[in-house]
Image (tube, rainbow, N blue to C red; front, side):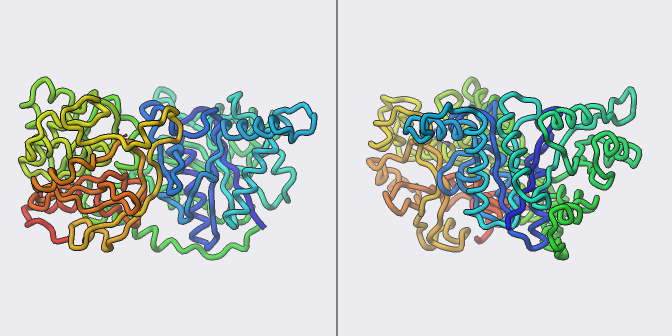
Length: 542
Ligand code: GLN
């Protein structure tokens, strides 16, 4: 019998609904329940792949190649289960399916409507997820804010679902904001009351309220006020406070008594929770005192939320290496005007060039890579960073003047990075990159093989361009070590320069598989090297 926890949000966006969802999931997992989650996104995009990450946040790639909303990344970093395209339902997908069936004639002459046809499809997707996952509990997170027009079909669908399922099999958690204005100094519950009123107007009643607060846990007086005005028990009002590390939130909410209450509301038998592993992990994040400084090289415009997984992979690795990591964003476009400005990188313990697209800023990133290589600063290049590192090497070590990627310079004299023939024919942008987890063969004895502890790995991709087969030999003769290739097409996947303290580029995005309890090997190698070098130690033996 599947149980459902619905999570909605009110007042405003960006309160951390994904984190609360994951915290609830963790509370259930440590009690031995199998949990999965589905994110319902009210936007009309079919997936997040075509959305601008600089506005919408990182596009998170799953094993199956699905380009998901970044909340799926949070799910994967907190919860045990594997996730696939079935864990994300967008309005785009729902409408596409309803319209497909309408064209097929499956509605037998009926007028096709939001209720029941769209809401039925939403319920079908949620129940299908429940069935496929065989989870004890399915978390259903509704994106957006209550009151948004576009979210209404999803809220109506969960209203129906709650009505159709047994009372004890569902519970609704509503996340709101309880602001405190410094001039008044008192937490204000009115926005929460209004938000619950909005919910009630569409037939939903929250069983638990999580109040996002900036100034610590809400006191009895305010919890009682929320309980009294929103029709729930005072013990069902929780505070999502500021936490120094994200992975602390499940423990914080558990300490407020949320775990036992959810279990009680869902009529589960209440196994004893085992938090030991999670607590150890959180402690390993807080304990270290040494700090390494990493230069993340790119364009300012890329800042925001676009590199959440990269930042998290660095933090996972730092916890394992026993240090803290400080990440500074370095604007590399300024290096293009004045190359001397790249000297700033010498003050860093590591240089990272993450994934990216397009010509603007590419030369500046190449200058940064050159500085890291020549001055032996630990370097990690991800996807575009790997391609640009190959270009830098081609120009300066293999004598290939004007080497470039045809993404930037279509007529480059040496197109060391080029499109595969099958990519050249593609005109539609959605879902057409090289996506998802592919098998990769790693050369035995290479640093990559030692870091991974195996010669066969699976990592996730999201790109179109590749190292051009015509240049393999020339680059390798000049000393580039491509220590991994894709199993199927033998495309270059990893570049190493073994005589450097640490220099690695990966065509894939290892950050998508980094977990707080299992850091991504390339990131770990990079962070550990940066830390050891800072401490004046010899090059680490991986
Ligand atoms: N722009 C490059 C490509 O499409 C790299 C993409 C990326 O870094 N994700 O191949």
